[in-house]
Length: 171
Image 1 (cartoon, one colour):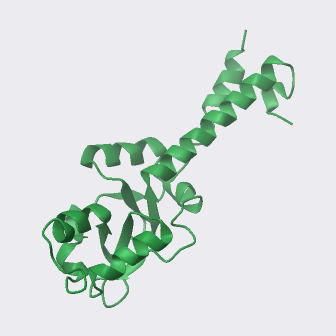
Image 2 (image 1 turned 180 degrees about the vertical axis):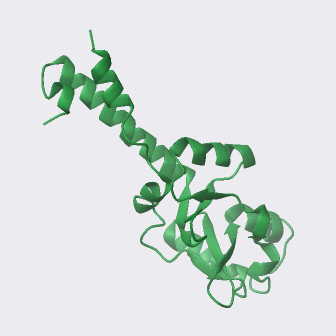
């Protein structure tokens, strides 16, 4: 029978934060920003080239001011038969108070709850102290992190059962 001490140690490890998820994210090593004055066709090229579903929208000063998702493009350009070479990003993106964000230290659960509440698949990550933009995460990034955590717990419990590593982890 597993000891309470082991279960507590395995299950109550330090929570993963939004910034940790971003560091493992598909968005981490690419330029996922687009100017609000750019055209929708360029956004589509970026979506396809990087295999991503959302871009951070920047103003003339390169400050992040909104988001543009594949859904925005589909609902506001493609479905209406508009010319993607003529439609500007600022005409179809989501701005300001309508953006759901994650704070740098938000947990996986907090991020998932925000996504579920608004039925979105991406979150901008900001530093809550100075409101600076840190990155972007997707629902896929959160799922990968949950799977990694689950696999680690299974490994620790399996090793404990066979007498390897036990309380201090797998060596």
